Amino acid sequence: MSETPSVLPRSRLDALALWVQRVNGFVLTVLAFALVACVVWQVASRYVTSTPSTSTDELARFMFMWIGLLGAAQASATKQHLAIDLLAMRLKGAAKRTLNVVIELCIIVFAALVMVYGGSLLTAKTFANAQVTPALQVPMGYVYLVVPLAGALLVFFALVAIVDALRAEE
Image 1 (cartoon, one colour):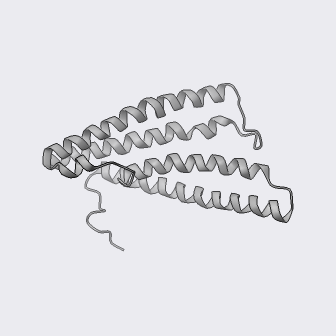
Image 2 (cartoon, rainbow, N blue to C red):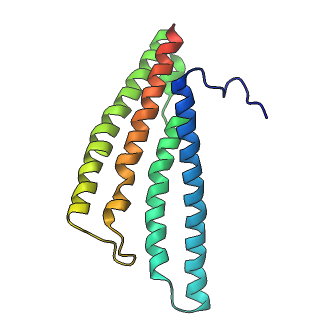
Image 3 (cartoon, rainbow, N blue to C red):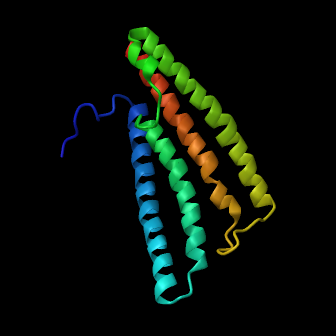
């Protein structure tokens, strides 16, 4: 099966970005199926055994967090995230590329400071305090680990977008 020319990577960076998108997409798919299984089991255990499973409720909540944050990175990578593009639609050429680079730089600043740096501090503090989840007794740091991970993905995909935008000028 051959890929369309628009999907073929133009550089090693594009090939790496495509690989990261595919791995993230696979992880999101597995998490989504697991989330559905948890919710189905939760409902079934409530009505069939009349004793609802407390661990699946907690697990589903944490998987939903992971799906939301990793999904945001995936949407950013594929340019399918929510955007108000009234100005971008009116611009052309260098002005449009400049606006896109500025937007990607804003994403990098936010994701690097709030998600990567702040999320890393939160994760480290949670591991240091040995905080665990109530039902599963799993270290809470593993739950919060998605924040710096998704932030790093957002930074990576924004850098790829900037390189692509600057390459388009040539």
